[in-house]
Image (cartoon, rainbow, N blue to C red; front, top):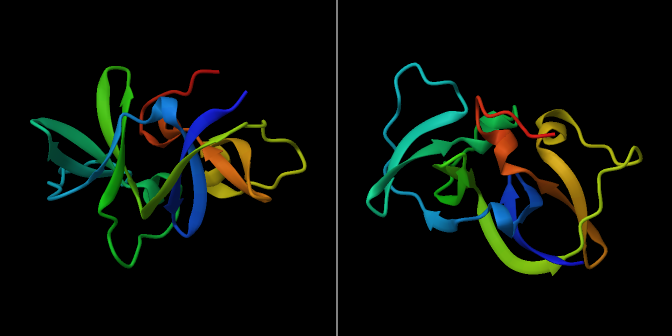
Length: 142
């Protein structure tokens, strides 16, 4: 059965995010750094009369920082808290059927931590990522 997925670009890679994880997509304005925060936490941002923690997706994946800081984010609600997960670009929303990752698919580094499946977009396999895996200190339910 097909589900809706948000197609995004992170660190030059096109990925799919299950729409069940997406509260909204936004442009991020000013980010206030948090002293002594882990590298995955870029800081805090005001968003529609609430404060959200901004997650540096590249840092969460163990990748080098971007030359130009991303200004788009996917807002996700995890355990009652909103997080803004930075992305380089947002492309589309489309229905796909997800297949689980198998032993024949190589997913390296931080992508292995975030990846939870594959969708096929016109013959191009896209990694499905779990936003929860990018939030520091949040355990992934088995």
